[in-house]
Image 1 (tube, rainbow, N blue to C red):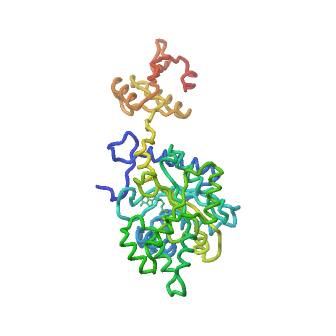
Image 2: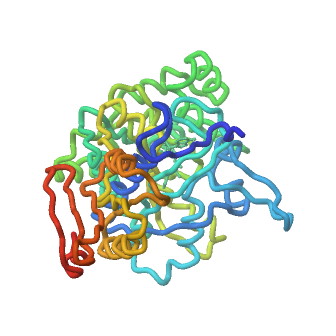
Image 3: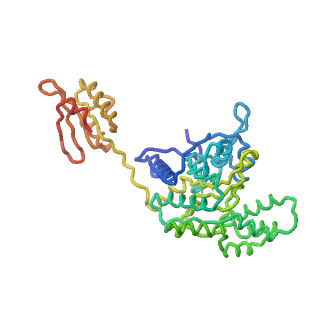
Length: 421
Ligand code: HAM
């Protein structure tokens, strides 16, 4: 039976094939994400992987809705696997924000599902590090979040030579748009959203195609490109740059109006992290979404918000390509050899003791020849082998061997055996 396309099996190392996904590497990434989020005083939350369909149909934008895994459940509810975490988070925060001091700074590592065309860096399931701040409208929060994004990439050994945060602003694009559109339009909001979608796809689409689509809205590709080229920071972007400069992070950011973000709910500053060589798709993306809490709560709550999501797929590809993944050698503390089957019960007691002390311990579940057990100990990269023997008086003796230093020790007393470390 094959697994579904776009889904992954994660194996423990050593991997069965070069293209298999490593559970060790995944854990390594999750650990770093969590460590850095905690350094910035973010707290972890989680939500359900299945949500009511309408959480997404109203708020996320066409692209993501087109990629939903949705169905009617047995209670005939229209549901969807979560394609992103932000609507869930906005729902959770809207319902409980009064109980929390502001700003609320939360992170999560959810698995997300998008039924999209499989391509490099894009699967139908991925894990995404999400960090979001609620209840702070000042740009110092945007800078804090971007600093966190930079540090979470640096934690993997990536430097300013490897990645850059492309910083932009929907406000800047909105001003650009509004200055050129005069008079009332019946479907103004829809047209503006279409305009943002065209900008979002500029880099991926043929220029003729973008030109045609822009012309339908009354714009030329040239004026759009000229605006991007100008790259003059708005007041808010300027203060974010200054804030990041104070932290010594200038080298990691640049203004780039090409970035506008595809999702519908962004309202202000937006950004994306890219590898500098341009070999991969975006590593991470995020920005301000000041209206989403109000929208999702039906006006009951209203909080400014901002956040980013970083996927594990592109990040892992990038770390592999730059040789930044550590070797994941599993190691065990003790392999307990049972050469005399009459001592199996005593050995099990010893194994239990060693494990209670916190050691990683392995042994042969069924009788096996001594050399076979030893071979297994070597394969498992054991630090010690341990075996019990009966001494001439009938007392139990432990024989401990350090496989790294070849040092051997005999442990006579029961206390010595239980005190092993
Ligand atoms: P997004 O740009 O859709 O944003 O996704 C963020 C990152 O998740 C992408 O840059 C990419 O690395 C990864 N990603 C997205 N889709 C896939 C996929 N199909 N396969 C592999 N990786 C993928 C969001 O999802 C926003 N909700 C982020 C956010 C949080 N904004 C505010 N708070």
